[in-house]
Length: 127
Image (spheres, helix red, strand yellow):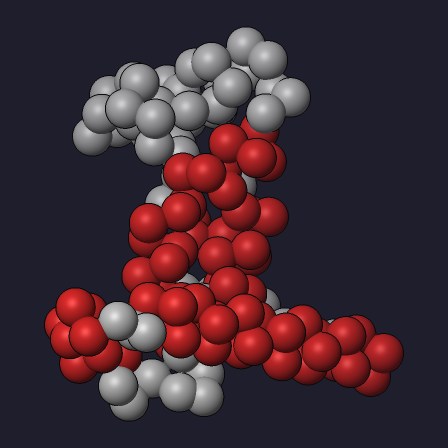
């Protein structure tokens, strides 16, 4: 679950860990790539005049696109979880974290609803 949370922090631009200088350079490169990716997503979302609401929502978001990144994560976190656990087979999560903490995760470590069985991606990062 922590790797999932770390991915969420990185995607949303909230990662606090910069590591040593070699890792710092890699992290800065990754952040620059993510900014470019989200710029492309923004450009694609707002290219038509039909998307005035999106233009308004994200108009002050550049160059970091934090709101777009938050929205993207909220929309795609299930898919990221599936990608991370696709080989987990019949694995279950070790705590009751589904259905308001009343059931365990099942079938590839997902809740019956398909949600990830963790909220760590929404907990502030600690070092």
